Length: 239
Ligand SMILES: Cc1cc2nc3c(=O)[nH]c(=O)nc-3n(C[C@H](O)[C@H](O)[C@H](O)COP(=O)(O)OP(=O)(O)OC[C@H]3O[C@@H](n4cnc5c(N)ncnc54)[C@H](O)[C@@H]3O)c2cc1C
Image (cartoon, rainbow, N blue to C red; front, side, top):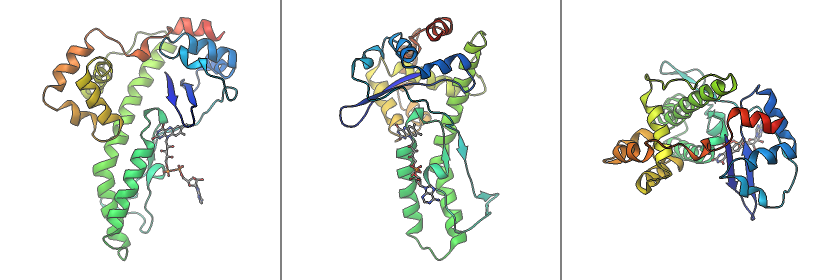
């Protein structure tokens, strides 16, 4: 996966995200290899026209983590409330950590505003808000990551992409949703509601007419992110 991000002060950032343990792609740490690979991705190649501020910087160790201090309805500790990344984090490619963290802090303010003299009640109340409003975003990202990891592993091992997980049709619909958002303006607006962490995917897809538009606009099309080198081409580029 590769992304281009506009940043502050007329700067931008290009990232190539690989699976941990994908040894040949470690060569991406080299500036020349990184540039070769990014130039092979049509929608990103022009991002390299700016002046680089520094060498390629590798980053590792992004992990999925979820902490809950209420088990079977009982707080295992009172007086400790985890907010933002201290509560849960996933790999940062979805760009949801800041809006979720801010909304989570606001939720804590609201719960704490009802009184701080009952640590047990506070722990239970904040857990209920967290599980109801925020944990679904964490679970959604985990589902998406599992699907993406399965696709990446298949590519690395030279296997056919795995069949869609029929036990989780929402993940498949989300993929179509992401594709369709590139072609249909109504789907694009619905998609932005998800990207800006206003509504979960299943909520916007359930809106009248959206599912038909998703199916029509995604039919036979691919994600722009899939329009890049194949695994074989990528290995040739990094060697
Ligand atoms: C590479 C990368 C790219 C990202 N891109 C995006 C993005 O585009 N959009 C987005 O929304 N999110 C993004 N995120 C996620 C986002 O940065 C985090 O979700 C967000 O910063 C979490 O905020 P937080 O306040 O919970 O934790 P943090 O920002 O980690 O803040 C915790 C603070 O506590 C301090 N601290 C730790 N221990 C102690 C201690 N013992 N005593 C005192 N202070 C302590 C730390 O130094 C830190 O300043 C990205 C994350 C990474 C790693």
